[in-house]
Image 1 (cartoon, rainbow, N blue to C red):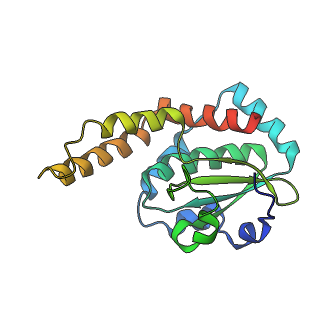
Image 2: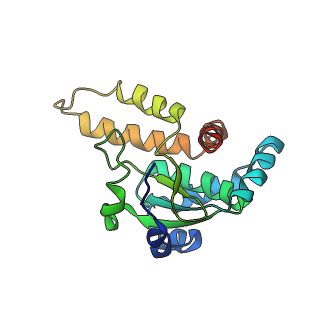
Length: 187
C-alpha cells in the first residue's frame, strides 16, 4: 500500500462518461458489458456495505486495451452501486502514476484500479485481470507458434481478437471479475 496521497491524480481524471465519449477503440464492447451486466442479491448487499467507506478511485486504462473493455464496465457498475466515484486516466499520459502500479514489478499492464480511502490514500488495488481471465490468456498463448515462426504475428492477432470477443460477450467471464474484485475489496 502506498502512503502517498493520490487525491491530485483523482482530480486530474475523467469521469466514466468523459472516458467513454473519448474512446475510439473498444467502445462498443465496453458499452455492451456495461449495459448487459447483472448482479446477484448478494453482490448488491455487498456493494451497499461498501458505500459506507466513502471511497473514491483512480483507473489507469486505455481504449485499445481488451482487458479494459471487460474490467472497466464491470467495475464501473460496481462503484455505481457502492457510491464510489472513479476517475479515469490514460496510461501513457500518466506514466509517473502507472509506474507505481507495475504488474510483476515490470509491466505497465492495464487496467489498474486504485481505490482510495476518504483521505485520498490507497486502500487497495485491483487489476489488470481476474485470475481466471489470466489463466485463459496464459493457456491461449501457449498454443501460439514460436515467435520466429512465419505465421506467429497472424496467429497472435487472431488469438487476441478471439480472446477480446470471448471476454466481452460471456457473462461467466464477467462473473470472474465481479468475484475477484469482491474478494479484493473484502481483504
